[in-house]
Image (cartoon, rainbow, N blue to C red):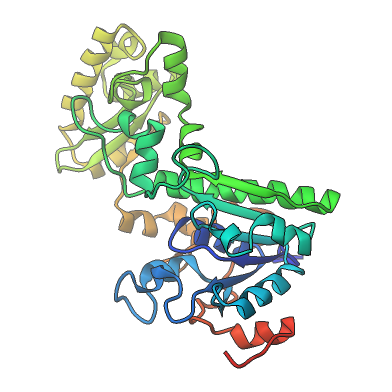
Amino acid sequence: MTNSPPLAGITVLDLSRLLPGPLATQHLADYGAEVIKIEEPKLGDYARRTDSAGKHSAIFNALNRNKRSVALDLKSEADRALFLTLCETANLVVEGFRPGVMDRLGLGYDALAARNPAIVMCSISGYGQTGPNRLQAGHDINYLAASGVSDQTGAAGGPPALSNFQIADLAGGTLAAGMGMMIALYDAARTGRGRHVDVSMTDAAFTHTVMPVADTVQHGRPPERGRGRLSGAFPGYGYYETSDGRYMAVGALEAKFWKVLVNALSRPDLESCGLGTPEQQRHARSELEAIFRGRTQADWAKHFANHDCCVNAVLTTEEALASAQVQARGLVLEEGKLAPPVRMSRFEPAITRPVPDLGADTADVRQRAGGETTR
């Protein structure tokens, strides 16, 4: 049997907004969970209006398929009571407010657990529920700065580099939250008791700084920006400009791949330099820079298609979307709507419910919970 949703029967009440939480809950929805997006009446999720791409913004469309939308004013006693009623049959509540907000609303974990001992609440915040920075505002750039990631990102001698992949938001607020939620849901199913999952985007970024922390332990300090083993020191790991201003990505870290690479470039004399002294590594990098500038990216891509040494073209977003690998993996469900990142047998992700209008399911959910349907 195919398309048996692995999360069928799981109900999620999603109070999160913008990027990290909504993408995490979309992943759950894609795998079959019923995700009820709880939004403020009139305003809704701020991501609805980040651009003028159509009825909903392109970003909102990318993060909120397969969900239902219910408009509740959590400052209203009646709507808070309805939310608590919904919690009695829900498995998971996801929220992204600053620490303390849910408690002030009377909707903190203890209040939810009193109604439903098995419920899991996942709180996604910049700095976590504890610590001196817990109430500070922030965005991805701030969490990367606070975790030491920014200091290690960029070219040698240059400033910290910005990425159009929001590392802390997505690897932290989305994927770390997903991991925490699944662990707690499994335990709740096993024991009948839920947990409060505390996800800090800064924590998630910091605990994955494996290479610079290892260097700090070994040498007493991390490498300078752009001079770490995988951030500029090794000639077999880096980006090389081509004659047409494009780039090739070289990941020939292991000796066997480095040997294939230098032979493919007709430079076997560089074989001893790949993991040699710093001077030898700088010499090899300089030589490779000159070699790669001699041909176009397309020429190099064709050349290295016949050499197994971890070298490929740096694609644009448009090229990646159209690539044979992305198409073969079914990573684009519709224009602008990317599939969830995990594949598993007997299930194929699909869009079963379009992006909801604000409050589109309010009446239905209120009726199901025994509340009024007038809002």
